[in-house]
Length: 68
Image (tube, rainbow, N blue to C red; front, side, top):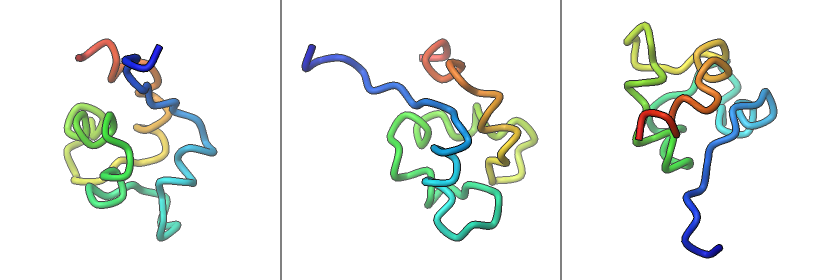
């Protein structure tokens, strides 16, 4: 049990928690709090603007685990 990979749960509440400055997007700095999201940042940032929007974040639910 202790060796389980922590999976990011893409929920509106998780987005709000990560979006520290409440600008409705997650920067690379903000994503750094969540190792899985940080490691898969470019994968989730589908439009490549350097930020993860709420839509991109919610769309990736489970995708990061599939990509690894």
